[in-house]
Length: 315
Length: 260
Image (cartoon, rainbow over all chains, first blue to last red; front, side, top):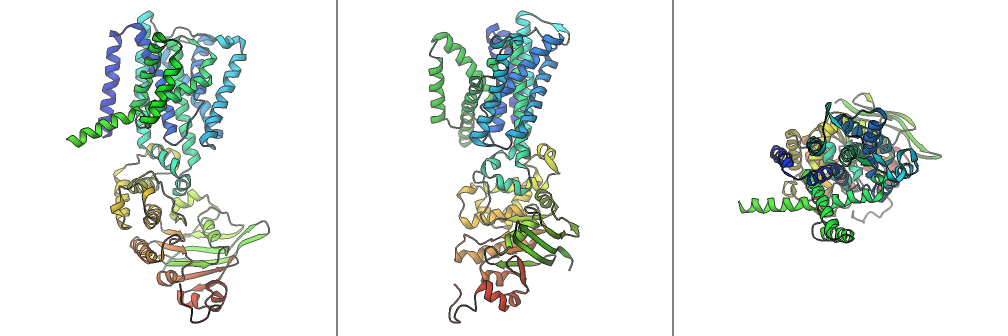
C-alpha cells in the first residue's frame, strides 16, 4: 500500500518535472510558486489532522523568505539549495521556540495565538525602513552550485528545485504519518487524556507538529522568495495565512498529494480569475470555499479516495 | 510467591487535608486485590500515587523491588504498571482495532519522542498484539466498529484491553463496572478477570459492588478516612465488624433486607 503510494507519488513528480520545459514561462513560474506554497499547506495538514488550525502559518513563510533575501543581501551568498535549506532550518528553529508556548494551547486559542505571532512579525517588518518597510526589497538572483542562470533557464531550475524539495518533503511527511507520532493525530483530537496515560506526552507530539509545519512553511517561503524575486511584509500578513488555510480546507487532510494538487488548482484559478474577471476573485474564492465545505467536507483528497473505492467495488 | 508491589507508610496531604495516611501493603504477584471504601476514603488517591499521578507526601512505593516513589507517570507506565478508568477513555473516531493498534504500538516503542517519530505504528508485531488482545477480551466482532458507537460494556472492555495490550505486570482498575447494568456486570467481570488471569497480571480493582468483590477478589483492602482498616480474604474483610459498620453498612440494615 505504502510502496504503491510512493511509486505513484514519484511518478507524479517526475511527470510534473518533465512537462516543465514544454510550458510557457508564466506557467512554470506559477507552478513553482504553487508548489512552494504547497509545502506550507502540507504543514497545515500535519497539524489539522490533530485538530489544530494555525491562522498564522505565514509567520514561517515570511521568515523563510526574509532569511533567504537577507543572507543574499548581506553576505552575497546566492546558492539556491543552501539558501532554501537555511530558510527551512531558520523557520524550524523559530517554530521550536514558539512551540513551547503554542503546544500548550488548542482550538481557537492555538489558531489566534499563531495569528498574533505572525502579525507581530508583520508589524516589525512594516516599521523597519532599512528593509523597505511595506515595499520590501528584491532578492538577489540565485545561483546553482556556482552556476548562474538567467531568464527561462533560471525559472525552470527553480521549478525543478521546488519539485525536488516537495518530493523529499512529501516522502518525509508520508513516513511521519505512518509513525506512532504521526498516527497519534486522530487520538490526540479524540482524547488527549488517554494518549497521556498510554505513556506519550501530548505536548511533546504537538510541539513536534508545530516544528514540522514551521520548517515546511520556511522552505515554502524560501522557494517562493527566490521564484518571485522579491520579499515584502505582506508575506506575514494574516490574509496570506488565510489563503494557506483556504487551500488546506480545499485539499483536505486525507492525503499528502492533495496538498500539492490543491495548491496548484488554487494558484491557477486565482491567476485566471484575476485576468478574466478582475474584482470578482474574492467572490469566487468565497463561493468555492462554501461549496467545498458543503459538498466535500473532507476536501479534494476525499474525491480521489471515493473514486478509488468505487473502482475496488467494481472489481 | 514473590512480592510485586510493596507500599510503606504512604501518606498524602493536601494542605491540612489528609487524603491518605499510614498505608502499608504488600502484594504478591498474580494476586487479585479488591479495594473498597466510601467515596473520599482515599482509594483513588492510593491508586494515583502508585501510577505517579500524585506524588506521595511521605512513604515509599516499591514495584518489583524498584523504588518508583514520585517517578513521572509515563515512566511508571513504561515500567509495567497500567490502569483503566472509571469512565472508559477511548478514541471514538477510531475503530476498535485501531484503538488497540495505537495502544500496542506505543507500548512497544523505545523510549521518548524520537522513538515515536521513527517507529511505524502498523508494525506486524503491534498488529498481532492488537489482534490477540481484541480476541482475548472477546470483542472481535466489533473490531471494525468506530469506538464511539460501542455499547457501554464493550467500551469498558476496550478501555481495559488498551491498558493490557502492552503486557503490564500490574493493572489498576478504577471501578471497572461503573455505568454497567446489573445484568451485565458479572459477565463483564468474568471476561476481564479471565483475560487478566491468562496474562498472569496482578490486579488491584476499586469496586463498590460487594458481590463482585466477594466473587472476584482473592483479597480485599478496605479504606476508611485515608487508611486501610481491614486487609484479608473477602470473607475476613467483608465480615469485619468495622467494615460492616463504616463501609458496607450490612449491620445498619435489618437482617431481612436483601442485597440489591
